[in-house]
Length: 219
Image (cartoon, rainbow, N blue to C red; front, side):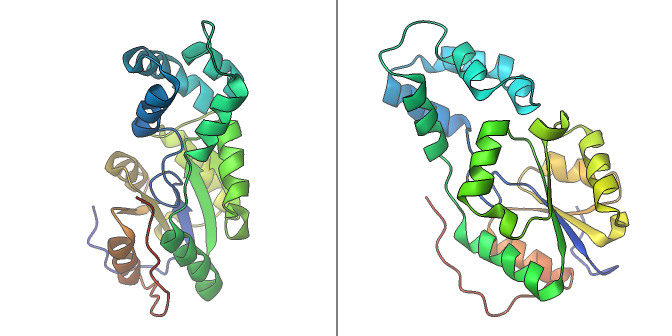
C-alpha cells in the first residue's frame, strides 16, 4: 500500500460499491439472515451459492435463474417474488460516503467510475435506489462487461473507458486484494475501512473536504 502522499493530481476515482458506498448486497450475513427468515439450510444455501454466484455476477444468469439454483430447486412455502424483495431490501446506503463522493465530484470536477462485482438485477436496483447516477459517470460492473475482480482485465477496461493516465486515478475498495491488483497496473489505491480513514487518505492525495456533516452509517 502507498503512504497516501500526494503525487500527480488526482482527476479520476474508481470506486467499489459494496462495502464502500453501500452495504454488501448479498453477502454471507444476508444469506444467513435469509436462511433464518425463510427456514433454509444455510450450509446447502452457501454451497449452492459458491458454485453458481460467479456465473450470475458475470451476467450469464438472470437473478431468477440464480435463485432457482440456490433456493427454488425444490418446492418452497414462499414465492420467488417475496425472496427477491427480501434480497433487494438488504441493500442499505452509507450516507456519509455517498455525500463525500458527491461533494468531491462537485468540488474538484472529478471523473468517477464504479468498478464492481455485481449481478445485473441487484446492480440496477442499487444504482437506481441510491441515486448513484447522480455522481457516477460510468459503471464497469461485472454483469455488464462479463469480467469480475480480481481479473486485471476489468481494470484495464475501466482504464480504456476513462482515458486517463493511471497516475491520475485513485481506486477505493474495501478488499485489500482488489486494491493490490489495481496498484499492479499503476493505479493508486485506498483500502476503505471506514469513512474517517478514507476521508483522511483522500486528503493525503489533495482531495480535502472540511465542511461535510458526518451522518451515522447503518449498523
